[in-house]
Image (cartoon, rainbow, N blue to C red):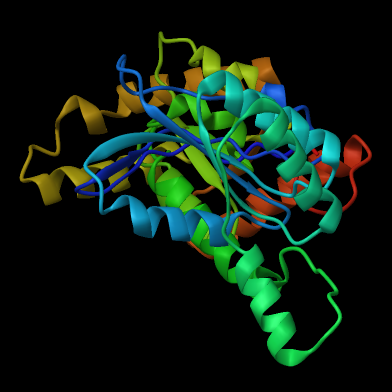
Length: 318
């Protein structure tokens, strides 16, 4: 299972509440949903045997015509009839409307049968288009789920990663840390954010969490796969220079506690102790360009995965 990022996408007319993606092998009942309002929202299910992007784009384009908040539950890579039945049952329990883009015949048939059984309204967004084009071209159907986005997967992965990183910078969105490919931790001005955005541009979901002396790490950080947590270490002198420059840019006194030598030493000592305590791998970011830091972060992830018998790609829950 690969849990997708939970996001809140808004426009002047519609609110999309937290969504979790699962693959076809997962239990549809495990979807993680969060509500941003105590009011009862209208619920819409999006179901696809591909990426679900086509379905989502159509619905988002339509929702701007309505001044209603909508809770969207998205499910991609649905190709087994059982998964379709489970999803439609959940939709019935939620009083939801189902939109789907399925090209696999077994999944399409299951959707219609389940909809009749549970009396759930379903809308086939792709079927009429497919049938019309097959008739026009006089071709035999050869369904290929997700083919539209396979050639542009790197591009969409990058967009997804950048959006995730924007919403999970400096400890924000900490409840969705489990969706990150990597989580950078360290003191303030330890190149966490810049490295995260560089990684995001390469299609890697990167979050960062600041650590403070005399404060334990947030519990959400300790619940995630600790192999994904990378500590950012920095030379005290280098950190002081960076912080003094930051204070000057703010028009503040460079003798502020933020750049105090003793305070910096205390912060770094506390972070080093946390790194050792939780067994996090680390990268020394002192005097290094962001490209070098990012490369070392990826190397640490790969080393960690190899150690536990990985397969050479990004660490995930799949």
